[in-house]
Image (cartoon, rainbow, N blue to C red; front, side):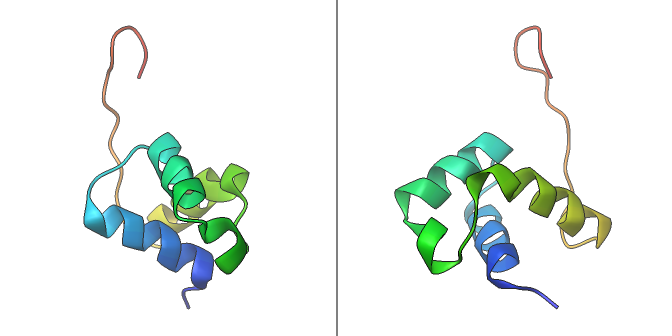
Length: 67
C-alpha cells in the first residue's frame, strides 16, 4: 500500500523522468517535506523500495565521467 511519501515520489516521476537529486529539490520547492513528513535524505530509500516493488524502473545514464 502506498503512503504519502510514495505518492510524492511517484507523482513527481509521473510529471517527468527525474534524477534522485531533482526529486529532492522538487520536494523542497513544493514544501512537501511538512505535508508528507518526508525527509529529503530518505528519497533514495523510497526510490529503491518502489523499484523493488516494481512500481517504477530506473536506468543509469553517464554524465561526463560519472554515472
